[in-house]
Image 1 (cartoon, helix red, strand yellow):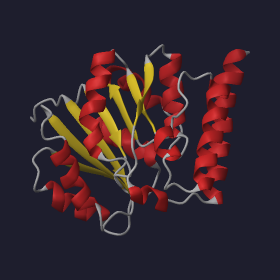
Image 2: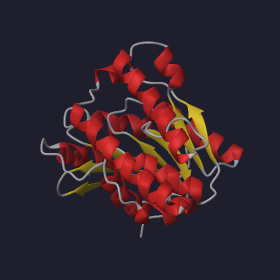
Image 3: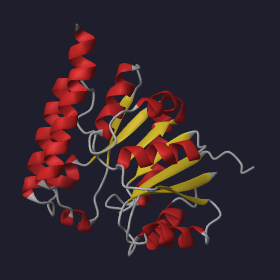
Image 4: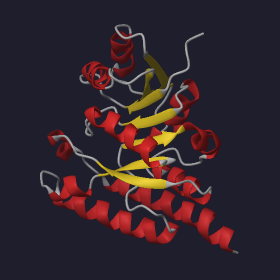
Length: 241
């Protein structure tokens, strides 16, 4: 039976066959100074060979495990699968495209422990201000942050950044109960942790230059808006009655 890890890094990915092997190598190298690290690569039903490429890379690293959804079901669903396969007392979510450099992980984990936080969420506000990110994405990010913080009475401004660190205990209670599988998964998780009385903070993160290449479609916006509205009705309106 493998030893229990101190730190689990969960890497959700989708359609990254050309990049995932190098990204796994980079995460392993960036966290090699941390004791007891495991990396759980979580493929969300890719059809381009991402899982196979990840498994080939994992064969080079004894601390890397690959799990996969048989079909595309959303980042939330594949992170639930990855979390169930992990054992770390500290858990980090890190998007597999590495728009958020993994070299930030050790300092973020140190701050989580030093500050006694239950969760630290990556905050990319400074990175957005610095430029190199599409204006439309900056506006959408700020509007979504403002609306959700007000609607859900959250102590943080950003919930969607793809780098987060948690103590395992609150995740054990929250992860199995999550209902949203796709884009508003992060918001549901943070809302659940907040209602459970967890100490949630923000940690400034930087973006890679290629992060500006990402695109948000009208379908994505519709799905996020729909799921956010349903979550608000279920967790705020009904509970307030």
